[in-house]
Amino acid sequence: MSSGYVKEPVYQKIAIDIANRIISGDFSIGDKLHGRSSLSSHYNVSPETIRRAIILLNDMDIVQSIKGSGIIIKSVDNCLKFINKFKNISSINSMKKEILDLQNQRHILDKRIEGKINEVIDYSNRFIKSNPFIPLEFEIYKGLPIIGKTVSESRFWQSTNATIIGIRRNGELILSPGPYAVFEENDVFIAIGLEESYSKIKRFIYGDRVGVSDKIQVNPINQ
Image 1 (cartoon, rainbow, N blue to C red):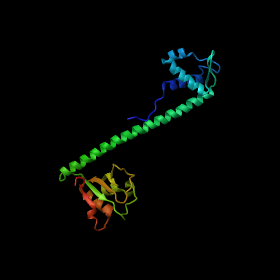
Image 2: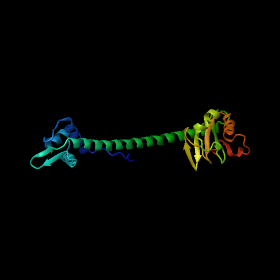
Image 3: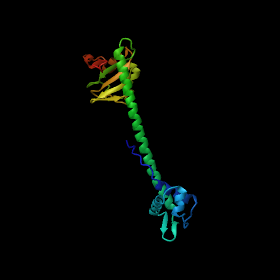
Image 4: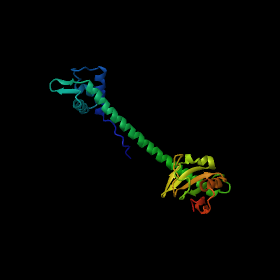
């Protein structure tokens, strides 16, 4: 799969290097650059690559190719503009690559989290009587005061000693939603906690409301 990162061509790197040398004083305005064969040998590239580098510098008004006179240094100021231009392009490409790398890492992490959640659920279902951590599902239905609050704002963990490991929303499972996830109507959230967490979560979410027992499921994943 393509990373979306555009690697700088060699001729562009050579053009940038020559511009840097002009800025640092290796060459002055009016000086002649070495011939293409000399530059080709210096950078260990083909004459065609040097030709493309010179065309780029010529287009940026840094040098001027004069038939019979060679390649003449024309401007130092334009060197700075040229370098800054490609520095910005390189920076953007670098950021694109970093974003794609992070997205790939997140995808891998999500798959690992999903696998661990499935392991916990499977283990709990097989050893429900001896396992201290029980996965629970609770539905957020219309009218509950928790709707619109984040996990952090609601102080869910402090009130229940349980951890939310997933939220079912619109047919999708949001893994490891974190403290800034917002409770929404019709959400079904998956939490793990000790045995007493069931009653704590039930009281925390539903309060003293009656008729909510059918909204609560214990170990429903494989049902």
